[in-house]
Image (cartoon, rainbow, N blue to C red; front, top):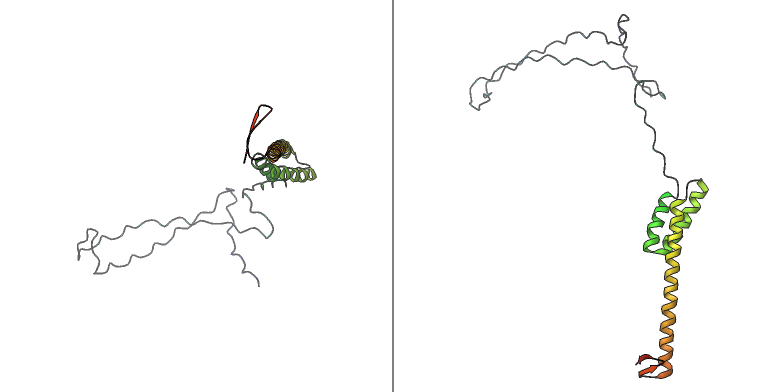
Length: 177
């Protein structure tokens, strides 16, 4: 399948480069007679409508021939493509945010992001911050859980030894049921 050939373009006047050749005046179309059922603009039937004013025809625009395949249009603006986000950058941000909310998950995501950013040679600042924050908060929660489990185990162990009732041992009151 082939495309039809482009029409020949007129040669511009060589004495004035850069200006298009003069455009011949366009012919004015003949105005059609007004039908007898027409009404005036004020809505009175039977009144003759005023003839339409003759406006000049708009100037015709001449367009250059399209460029050959594979070439950019001359004078068309060329915009740079946006740089893609390095792999792991978004993961580092998500890992840092989750390090404050769900510390172990944020810690794991930040470690994965640091590895991905390290492979591409990108800066790993946010991923390292997520690792530090996630590790500190995770360690805090682990220590807190260990202390609470130990305290409750000691309390339940003491109640198991003493039996039901209220007991005072070394200045500490225990209520066992």
